[in-house]
Image (cartoon, rainbow, N blue to C red; front, top):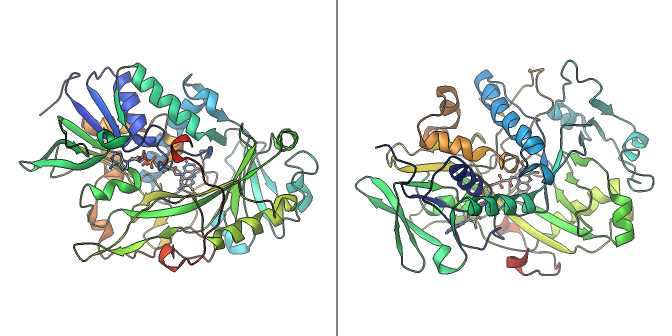
Length: 461
Ligand SMILES: Cc1cc2nc3c(=O)[nH]c(=O)nc-3n(C[C@H](O)[C@H](O)[C@H](O)COP(=O)(O)OP(=O)(O)OC[C@H]3O[C@@H](n4cnc5c(N)ncnc54)[C@H](O)[C@@H]3O)c2cc1C
C-alpha cells in the first residue's frame, strides 16, 4: 500500500542516519514524521556525536556496480558538504593525509591518483615532508617508516556533533516531531502485527502506530529485529587531549593525519581539544544471547581500554611526541554495526513491508569475495579502511526514503538490500579488511584495564 505525505511515519534513532532521514522527509513535504531517540539529540551513544569525522571521497571496490553505487552516494554527500547551506558551515576542507608504515600497509592503502589530480594528490615520503604538513614545531615526530599521500582539497573533516544537531534542528523547524530522552523517547519494541510492522512501543508504555517505521538505531538495531547475523556491533576507541588557548592557535590548519596501521587525529576543535583514535579492526562484546546464539552486545562506557591508550600514545610519539604523555581529557568507546561485507542495509524488509531499514552504517566496505580485495581501479583515490557512515549525514536520508518509496535503482537495491545469505555461518572475528593494533578483532571480555579519564555528563557531550 502506498502512503501519502500526511501518513504517519516513525523513525527509530535520531543518530546520523535517522536525523538525515527525518530532515529529508520534511524537505520532501512529509507532514507526520516522528523521530524517537533514547537520549536528547545529539544522543551521547550516537556514533555521530563526536567532535569531528573524516569526510572524503576515498573509496573502494572490485565490483563495478558497487563502485557506481558508491560513487553516486559519496559524490552526492560531498556535494552537499560543500554546497548545502545547512551543512557547509560544518565542513573543513583541510586536506587528508592517508598513510601507512609497512610495505603491507602501503599495499593496503593502495592510493592511485586520478588523471588530472596529480597536483591535488601528492606523495609524502620523507619525515621532513610529514613535518611540513603543519606549522613548524607541531608535527615534530620522526614518522618512522611512514609513507602516504596527501589529498590537498576535496577532503577534510566535519564538525560531526554540530552538523548532526543542526540537521535535527532543521528537521524540527520543518515540522518533524522529535521525541528524545526519557521513557517517552526510548523505543522498547516494534509492533509486529499481521506479518508487518505497524509502529513502535516506547518505554512509557505508549503505543505509536505508523504506516511506515524506519529503523535507524545504529549498533542497537539488532535489539528490535532478528537480523539473522547480518549486524555485528563493533566498537572503536576515541580519546581527547586538551590544549591551552595559546597552543590551540598553533595546532590549527593541519590536514587530518591518518595512518591506517596506527590511528588518526585532527586539528583541535573549538574547545581546544585534539581528538585521537587508534586504528584497529575493532572490539566486540561477544555474549551468549537468551536464545542461545552468540552476539556482540553494545554497552556504554566513557573510557577506553588501557591497551588502546598505549596505542594512541605510540601514535603521538611518532607524530607529536610533545603531547605523548599529556593526560586524556575525555575517552569513549563508540559503536557501529558491521555487516558481513561492510555494505549498508537500506531496504524495505522483505517480510515486514512497512518496515524500512537504514542500518549497517559502519562500512561501505572493501571486501572482495576472496577477503581483502586486489586494487585495480584507477578512478578511486584510496581504499577505505575506516568506518565512514557519518560522511553521508547530509544525504543518506534521501536514499532511505527512495527505498521506502520503492524508487531505489535496481543496481543500488542489489548492493544495499537485506541479504542474510551473506551472513550465513558468519565469522564474528572477521577483520573485514581492517587492520592496525594487533591486526585482529578484539573482545571487551578480554580487557582487564581501562583508562581513568575525567567523566563528562553524557547529556552535555
Ligand atoms: C570511533 C569511530 C570513528 C568514526 N569515524 C568516522 C569518520 O571519520 N567518518 C565517517 O564518515 N564515519 C565515521 N564513523 C562511522 C559513523 O560515525 C557511523 O557509521 C554513523 O555515525 C552511524 O550512524 P547511525 O545513524 O547508523 O547510528 P548512530 O549515529 O549511532 O545512531 C543510532 C541512534 O539510535 C538511538 N537509539 C539506540 N537505542 C534506541 C532506542 N531503544 N530507542 C530510540 N533510540 C535508540 C541512539 O541513541 C542513537 O542516537 C566512525 C565511527 C566510530 C565508532
